[in-house]
Image 1 (cartoon, rainbow, N blue to C red):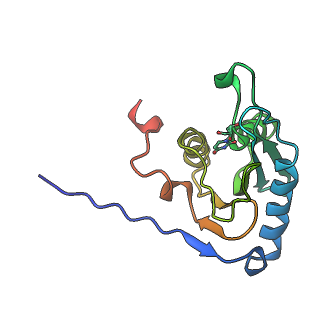
Image 2 (cartoon, rainbow, N blue to C red):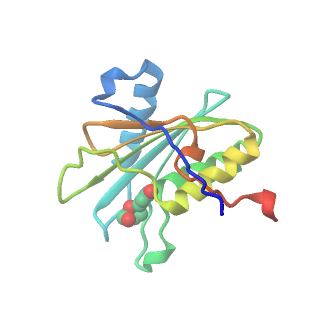
Length: 160
Ligand code: THU
């Protein structure tokens, strides 16, 4: 028997002001995107902004549907759009913000498992890490240097 221990490092910042200017700008784009979310069923709005290596910023918000499973998360809305428009550009970083209408979320809200899997696909494809910053509506921001920290034991194309 072999025991495998997995370690992940996540950095937590108390406020946006602690982050570099370009990250604040990207998070502000994610906040703008969150305000455009279509979330009439959950009342939980999410915004995502991606910075590409050509300096293009792509944003997305969650899009819900009366047939609930047909809706899509903000992160996948943004990343699928990015790769369909710019298939040859790498994603440098991603900023995500989420908030519920019920209460102001002050703790970082991590991307769901399905979005982690989708982001992982592009991190593997581009062979370079994607920095991920995520927060609630206000307050603390968490940073992961790579999607791999958020999804250990990844399922990827190497097994196909
Ligand atoms: N949602 C996202 O947009 N991203 C996530 O990572 C988690 C959940 C959306 C889906 C749904 O519209 C709402 O948040 C509540 O789950």
